[in-house]
Amino acid sequence: MSASTTPSTKPALLTLDCLNKRFGGLVVTKDISLSVQEGQIFGIIGPNGAGKSTLFNEISGYIPPDSGRITFDGVDITGRPPHELCKQGIGRTFQIVKPFPSRTVLDNVVVGAFARTSNRNEAIANAEKIVHELGLGRRIGQIAKNLSIVDRKRLELAKALATQPKLLLLDEILAGLTPSEVEEAITLVRTIRDRGVTIVMIEHVMRAVMALCERVLVISYGEKIAEGTPSEVISHPQVISAYLGDDHAA
Image (cartoon, rainbow, N blue to C red; front, side, top):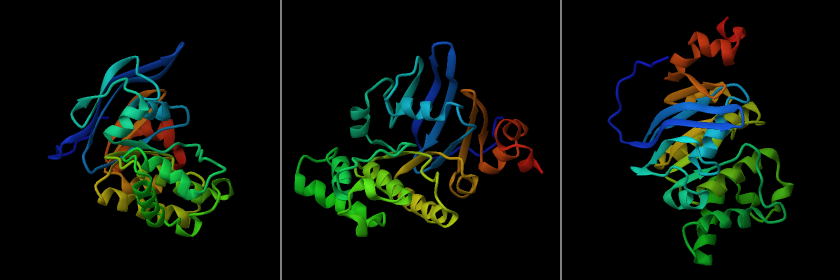
């Protein structure tokens, strides 16, 4: 699908040009290209095993692409390691949240804050602000392993935001949440974008994708099968067949 949309006047913050990655004989991403505009919320959807998280790993430096180019904020960042990309302004969450389990909520977020300062007092002040903004103030001294799933998700997000990203990659941040918690998370994601953070999100909760995303990329077996607005992609026959299913079509 080639979406028919009006070209954006905003500059591209992130561009992927023909990214390819294979593990042995398995092609995980094949000629994936996309452009994310500054200030945008961009969605990536597709069935399990489609290559979505691998794509995030390539963008954030955890694995290098075999070929292709990644450009962020006008700079070629292909193959650069995660710690360099973090300092350049790319933050991310992980599908499986892994806090420092024996440390407090505040301690976890302070670790992220140290990406921007070596001053402990400044890092603590920045972390405290983010903890309260994300609704974790009542948990600030709680040990991370004792948090509920929704608070662990918030902590994962707080850790990423503490690095002060220009671009935030959200990997299924809504998974496991109740409908009311999803609504709260949708509001929170919008708030983060409105503060100047560009967002790319992998998500299976289609209600959130429809509510949040300006553009959506759909991949299956590592290949792009559609890209466009949410309403365009959910009506695309190949997306229905590969991902959404016949119930959606009905």
